[in-house]
Image 1: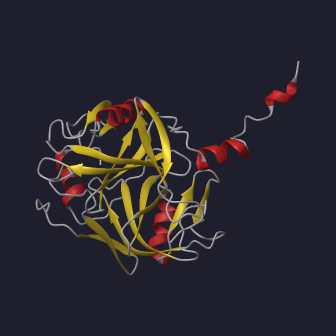
Image 2: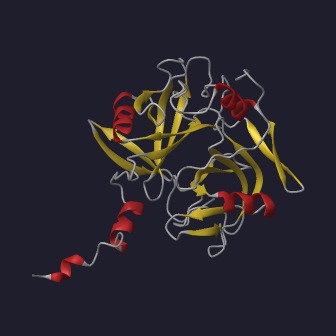
Image 3: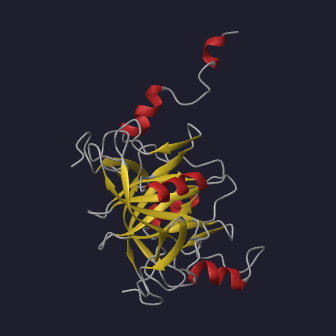
Length: 147
Length: 147
């Protein structure tokens, strides 16, 4: 038996890492749960709208249809964004990060212009404020005004 | 974050959900692995630099020092961003999403102005291009020029 082929199982080789980071082959890497994180940005305004997850099927549907799909962890189902809320997202550009385990979706927002189920444009509508070690939240985007 | 999932499986009660989403109490929710995802944005330019993870200690250190800390999943260690690369990140504002399980860090980038270990400003330097079902990558940010 030839043992030489058995030693490379502790992580990617330098060549593999370099290919993944500097190559043009799309090799998305999903976690043990089959998911990769996607940060979604308004293509026109550039602000971060939300953060969600894609599995392989969601990624495939997003690229095939140009309509953003995620994987809903709570419902454990493929989720075409906006299918019930009307807050659809049309893909303008999909980017991938250095090690290809995270996506950045630049989107055009449909429906009422919101991305958050609370009715706001962005899910990130509160900031953390600290005062002598205690942390509280403050609204940066008021309720139910998305524009 | 997972917008589609509010039909009350085994999850929190309506009151708890409302508090978490509309309240001013900071109740960050970490996953089973103790981590929450953080998307990091250049506070001045508004572009997404990277996506990383924070555990409770990283969050605490970030808020206490104003210098962004993450949890390195590969090294399994608290990671003060820039401690070896010099690519420090000074916190300008930390936001939390609707269900408080994801963070948005607005930062001022130190060092050479980059956030990615490849030397680029952003980790999202390639976009996905599809051609008749086949997906390839293309660079949106060339190598080693971060500005």
